[in-house]
Amino acid sequence: MNIPRTSFPRIVIIGGGFAGVSLAKELSKQEVQVVLLDKNNYHTFQPLLYQVSTGGLEPDSIAYPIRKILKDFPNFHFRLANVEEINTLENKVLTDIGVLKFDYLVVASGAETNYFGNAEVKKNSMAMKTIPESLNLRSLILENFEEALLTSDLNERNALMNFVIVGGGPTGVELAGALAEIKKGILPKDYPDLDTRLAQIHIVQSSDCILKGMSDKASQKAEDFLEKLGVNIWKNVRVTNYDGKTVTTNTDLTFETATLVWAAGVKGATIKGLDAGGFVTNGQRLLVNEFNQVKGFDTIFAVGDIACMVTNECPNGLPMMAQPAIQQGKQLGENMVRLIEKKPMIPFVYKDKGVMATIGRNKAVVDLPKFKFQGVFAWYVWMFVHLFFLIGFRNRMVVFINWVYNYIRFDREARLIIRPYKRHLKK
Ligand SMILES: Cc1cc2nc3c(=O)[nH]c(=O)nc-3n(C[C@H](O)[C@H](O)[C@H](O)COP(=O)(O)OP(=O)(O)OC[C@H]3O[C@@H](n4cnc5c(N)ncnc54)[C@H](O)[C@@H]3O)c2cc1C
Image 1 (cartoon, rainbow, N blue to C red):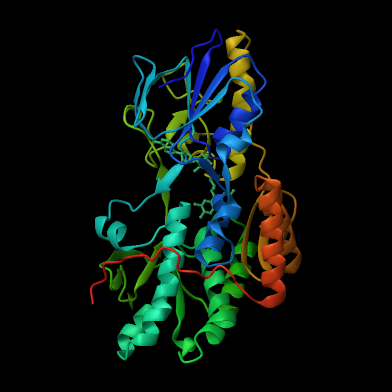
Image 2: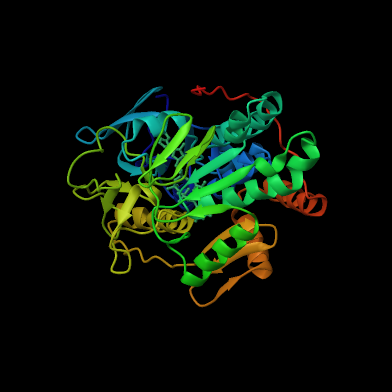
């Protein structure tokens, strides 16, 4: 890989997500050479992916060029590269554009969808972890309605307008709320000759409540909001298979649907060479100590979703959310400088800033460490926080204008089938 060697130690970061970008920014003014590798040339603001899937926002408003984030920083190099392997013995990474030696390596590769080994569900369901996946889902939703208009077979029409979301976490809840709003506000206008009351939205949740990590009040209120929007919530039901037509569960319940969205779990996006050994947990995350060093290594670190940092409060590791990723990235930047200067590193302490989810227009639930609230005010707080953490002034402006427009007009302008999604349905 064509990167000049300097007298500064070389830190290679894999991943330009929340953790990788926060770390790179922290290191930007230090006497180190930073090489950031990502398979995309943009940073994705994942919390708003569901709005792309449902036509509320254009994809470019939640993505930001990584080169632009760090354009003014000396000693910084970005390469568009897929890291295929890590050689921990020779301190080098193997990528699709060449090999790169490192002095220090930081794995910030995030997470990927976890199908828990079910290959058929993986093949037939839709995921929503990346922008291309969200665009696929957007196309599929819209194509379903176009197809529903054409068919005279009532069962087929029902299946096309039946949406099953597996997983009642924030992603599933937010997507269900947005789909319910499309059903209410947009379908009757766009498809006047279709009986849009047939459109059904289901959430299937394996445990006895939705938004499991949040307070009981937030979970109950979110359920009330969704039920008022007409979403069906099936609790204590586990999806066992989906052949592209029928969803089966561990109960008698089945669903005929053309769209199953899998929002039921994630696992660490490990990379060959650092994907097996005592330091890899059940959720495929890399066990790290309080300095984010991967167990057994002094110069290899992991931050964000891929890192499993066990604390007294979180025995299964810190939550896979944006805040731990941002905070770890920042603190590791400081610690790496200390390490290079042979000073003692400072243990990471997670500052819990709360969790929130929106269910739709004027409806959100917010659990802050000291306050918990739901409803309209929570919705404003949700919007403010998401705008604040979006990268880029233009993106903030575009998202804000879109939201105001959508709010006033009860609309979602980006309902476009730009890149049709080809699915392999069993008819
Ligand atoms: C739909 C959705 C909604 C969410 N909503 C919320 C929310 O409301 N609040 C919240 O706090 N969190 C939310 N999260 C979780 C949050 O987005 C993650 O916790 C956060 O993105 C983790 O940051 P990260 O830097 O560890 O990983 P990521 O942000 O996932 O970044 C990983 C980066 O690594 C790159 N990469 C991976 N493998 C390789 C490789 N082999 N080679 C090169 N590059 C690679 C990827 O392209 C990516 O850019 C949501 C996640 C999703 C999917």
